[in-house]
Image 1 (cartoon, helix red, strand yellow):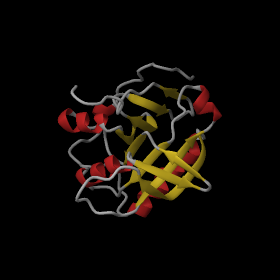
Image 2: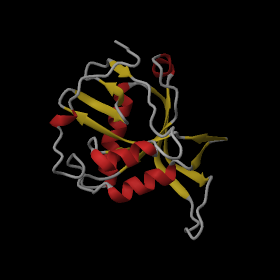
Image 3: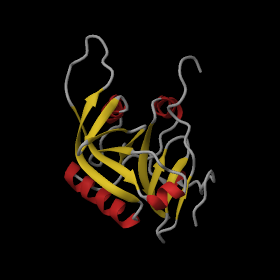
Image 4: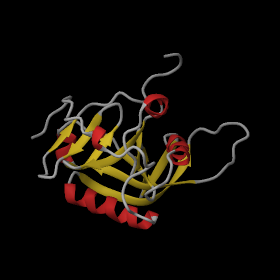
Length: 190
């Protein structure tokens, strides 16, 4: 079943929010391997680029000038595009047990980057953090205003891409749902 603008079941409440991130992946490499396995199993991405070099499009005064490298750039395949998701997705991967502060700052910076994949430069309108549960309150608001989300799992689904709502939800049986996202589109006073 494919549905656009349908709010999937709400099972974030089942996540253990007492831990900063979930899973038992003691290294970033182990966490990345599990993420890659789930992405490949879902069959919704045409290409997955690993360790992609980027270029910051906007610099702030008195900030370090350095290069950028994001863990994954995901290109949606025809099935996902036909369901309503055509955006390039950036993913920053961390090991289990990390707090979200530094990865969030990194992800916000990455929304200001162009990513080099082969002969092409791409923008990732949304950057997601794996493996972090849905955030709440002020932190969620800051994330949404910057187009940053999280990727998590639940007992019923191996992958959920979460912004202001579950924008891509992949079920264990291979079915998936897509909902339009509005996060990161407002400017100035809200």
